[in-house]
Image (tube, rainbow, N blue to C red; front, side, top):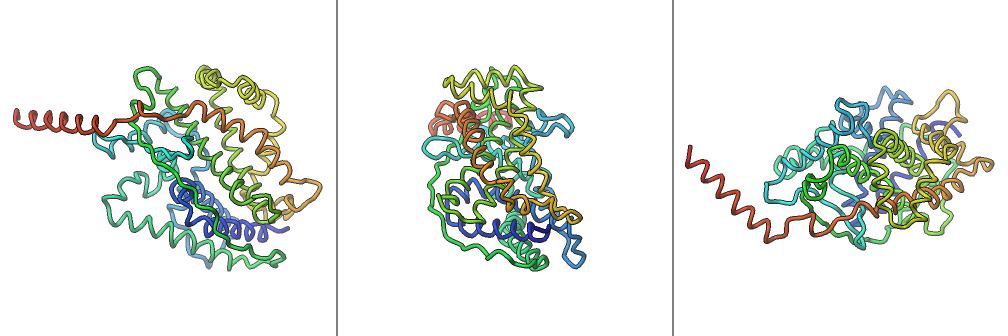
Length: 377
């Protein structure tokens, strides 16, 4: 299968997920950001690989969002600590001193994702502070245009430019079940436990939150699109997104275990289920072959025009490879245990937030202090 056919298939899968999920609350609140990043990766890689000179230049924000495929910033000035502090400061500066300033999304009281992930995805783009969208009408309009017009229209335009021999029928669009999520807002210094945890330990918690949302997106695709049906596009996209996300997840966790060994063990030791803890530790001790296999397919986000056999679609359709079966195994034996291990550590509760009474109290107190200072001057 050629690079053109692989790219065309990627676009079909993205369209299917977008138009099938658009009415899902959990998708629009949580997973749309993972989807947006995934779409930006496809758009930039297609544009770079096929050198579409008659195609308009890819939006700069698409390029910036695409770059945030990694969930650790070791290559940036100040490393992971600086990235965490930057994202947290964005949240804190966007809210008053008496308000909760970090949002989480819960389903059945388990964390699906966080506004920390949204802010991270937009790092370096025009929407680096997404909270400005509530006050800056021009920026809000630009964002709405990016999500509702630029990305979908760019995908369709690229699809028309590719125009491969369509040996595969286009996927059907069938709305998925609407899942209800619950918002839960917290105070940064309470959730990250400023009085007890070091900045480096807090940065690990931050990275675990990003990791959890990446894993939950794969789970969202698995639960809503596989559904015991043998649909080519669903099986393909599940395998595509699993290899992409698991590669960055595993690299992130290996990085933590190597450079923040003490913090990593604090997380491991917090997992009360001994069998689960032992299983996760075993993944990092004995699964180097699996990690290498995942990386091989993650690297196929790039389309290989010179060597058609080196494209993801070719391997996916090769019965001897059986990529889908392997991804299915990795999902159950690696992804789900890691997800459960993170969920046991990343929990939110009332002690992490200001209650309505406390917010009103602090609001009154801080306003009084500001008024007193202004009269003194």
